[in-house]
Image (cartoon, rainbow, N blue to C red; front, side, top):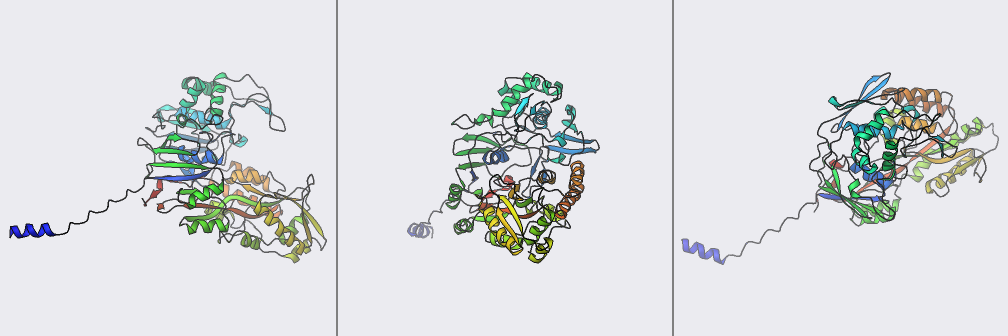
Length: 556
């Protein structure tokens, strides 16, 4: 029996060897339009879409924005707490054992330096009408200017509790969007040729700047500012130095070329955003067409591809790319000039069929788009927009030519509109304004060069907070009867519920005064390749989709 068994075994066909399983990828490629020119995206010259995209992956602060641009506290790095409402007192706590990507601890010194940069506390510059400095010093050349409503006293430090405390000069609505952490202070100090101790001493002892009495710049602050302003930029014709890319997030830079940035997961990262992926490659493209071609070809896994046309959308979906479209914070609004008569403003508002504008111009790519119902926000902000537009006196979205004629007492009228003729959507809207106005007896025409326009048709926004959008909208054209009062209240509201109520009052005031007509928001799109999961839509124009720590891939 034994012999027979052996013989039969020898005559049997061998079992085929199992095919080796293809390894699952652990890294993804992100496609970005533009070039990487700096590892400091907060400077005036460094705040480009490509640099901001890289910063969103590398830099970690005490808060961030989700896909609907609402604040998400970073509970893995520290804690921001409103200690007191009046005077507004805010504490910033850092958790222990948090380090920069070079292993240096993240400390209160980093927070204090971040405050010095963003507060412009030491500036004593005076500017002319063109924004040029005529006397004094501006130390840090930030992309975002200092906000006069966000002024604070010099911070106090409690090193035993790893806490920095700010006391504001007055209550400030956006206190929870001041995240402090900036470039690593030890890197800035090294680039400036000073010690961290010298820089901290300068920040803690130098007098507050006074434009009425400018003084010679503090040499330590000036050296640190020069390092911060340009020390993270690429040299002419080159790329930024990878050694400058010291960051607090879960990635570290391994390679930089003109076309791509490669980042690897930090195994020593202790925060809340530890990614499942082991690495990312960020590829840079000269324009949107090149980015779309790479996504379609499967060379890019994740990309914010912007405002697609129907042909582009079809090409991506035919290639098996998952595309999510949605609203962004960029809104197209018609705003009337101060001198435009009230009856003409009312008549134009009544003449516009905003439903047909949205249907004609947006529905082929985003079928669920609706006319914009607020001057201050868009559906990009999710539930916040829904709450704001509930009872804010937004007009109907259909045209009423008869009511428009009645507002003008059946008089003929002319509306001169300034708009960007090179922008496709603005041009399409202007053409339809001409047709709609004619039905109401209003001759809509383009304002000639040098001619005073009655209204401006333009894209506004990218303001993710109600405070900022209110501030910017009230700087444009007609104000409502109570808008400035409501804005002063909103500025000092530190509870989100109160901020929302004041913003709704501003909207009501602007609509009551026929200050303009919000039309619609620009469409955005996020493209995700085959087998990629966990990527959410972002309403930030050109922004990298948020929460990269949830991304994964299931295909080889």
